[in-house]
Structure formats: structure tokens, C-alpha cells
Image (tube, rainbow, N blue to C red; front, side, top):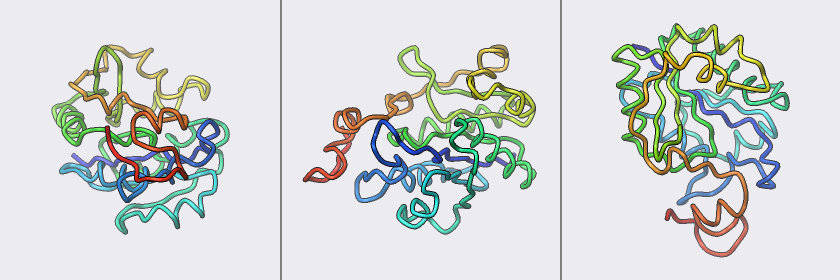
Length: 205
């Protein structure tokens, strides 16, 4: 099975006050950390979808050379437009499935990613990690689900596919990081370490 991992990193980080792709974490950035996380056995290629300040993000995140960077000019319309941009790349590569991972979830365990991949390889249409009764990331979507992703309303995003097709979903065990989104400076300080620009090195909890 050919699986393309798509990192969704096009937003401006309005509540954070800066693009979340650029946030520092343990000597790297959220985006580079996500690329490292997605580099798992079974993932054939990794695509980072950028939008706001795409040029700056591409230069400053120190991405591995094997990560393909694409730009979503419609990023301001919502995350689903970045999902569609990632779908374009997956289809162009003849992929069988894709992983969708938002850049603001940098603390996901590699084991969680592996469980999602294993579920896809076993035939799941959609595989989603869950932890503490909450759905987490990354989400795995086999090609059979892609028309539904294309047809989903922009204001509902990929969640519409999960809500409208619960029979497609296979839940796999997640971890605390899979549900730990970091959207504000306060969440960054609580879950990772000091706020951007503060003295001291970011650290994991």
C-alpha cells in the first residue's frame, strides 16, 4: 500500500500570533517535527501544505530534503482547502491512502502513527486514533473516502466525513499527544514549555 502523509501547515496562527509551523520545539520546529513523525515504515512520501507566509515557513523550518513542499493559495478559506491540495498530490502519486496531520499536534507518539497505518493496511476506509474518549490525529483516509473529502462542505471540513460515515471509521488506540492541539501561547506554555520568544528552551511535559 502506498501512503502519502500530508502535513497541514497553511494557517496564519492567528490565536498564537505567528505561524505554528515555525514554533520551536526541542531544537527544531513544529513542522520539521511533524515531518519526522510522519517518516514511518509504510509512508511512501511526505507532503507539507503551506499557505500563509509560505516562503518564510519553507526557509525557516529546516525540513528534510525528502519532504515535498506545496502551496495552497486558498488557505484563508479553511483547512479543507489544504486537505484538497494534499489530495491532489496523493492522487498524482497514485497513492492508496493518505495520512492527514495538522502541524499543531507535535506531541503525537510514533506508535499512534503506526497503529493508524496498520489499520489502513488491514483495509480500514478511515482510521482515527482515540484517547480519553476524544478523536485525535493523524487521521488515515483510504482512497475510497477521497470523493467524500472532496465533497465535504468547507465550513465542516474533514470532520464531515467522519460524521456522515461513522461506519467507515476504525478507532485505534491513541496517546495524549494525539489529542493535544496547541493553538494559543497559553497552550504552548502548558504543553511544551515557555512561550515563543521567552527565555529558556522549549521542553516536553
